[in-house]
Length: 225
Image (cartoon, rainbow, N blue to C red; front, side, top):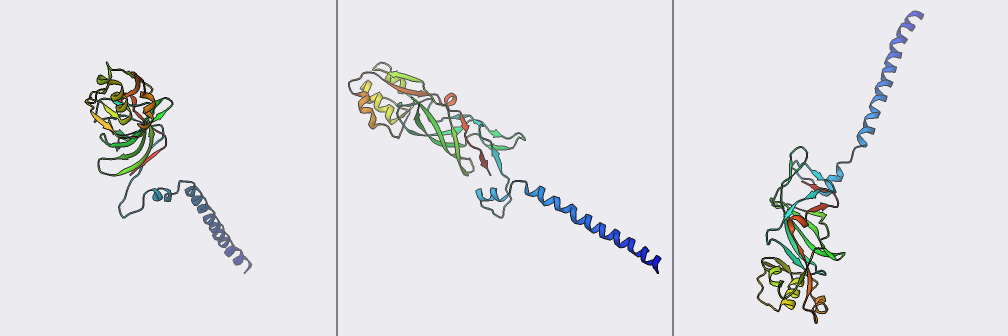
């Protein structure tokens, strides 16, 4: 009887050890999984639906080439804010070749006075499929100025997209009310021009080449569906 009891105790001990081992091992799995970003954070940005979506993020600092289809150049007053809509000039793809932002996507924003120059601040990205996203991006500050006189005022304005403030300068200096603007941009800053034009035959405007001056840089990451 004593020998039988010893023989039975062995397997019982082995089974007990096996249970302890199988209980300890899985405890490390939830810890490693919970260290990953919670998927619910993405769901908060894009409400869940029955469809399966993939999300791509374009990191802050990414540069986006743009074009302006309305005119070859944009002319604004130094103190002027003017709405401008740009187009993405080339397809933007990730390192795997996946198309994220197609060429021709619209970027809505405005030109604002900054440090004696003008800077484009992007507000909304609209893809060709109609999906729109808030976007935080900006161009460099353009400080290139041209002096407006009776002689060159018409040449500066011809074929350009001209802000309302710049138009007031051009009209006031040249005296020509029939300048052929390519497009007139609505905006703020006109009221402050009275003092600039009073008794002056010369004044300055900022001339912007969209393709070279308005390349955008993302100031925060952009998540796309």
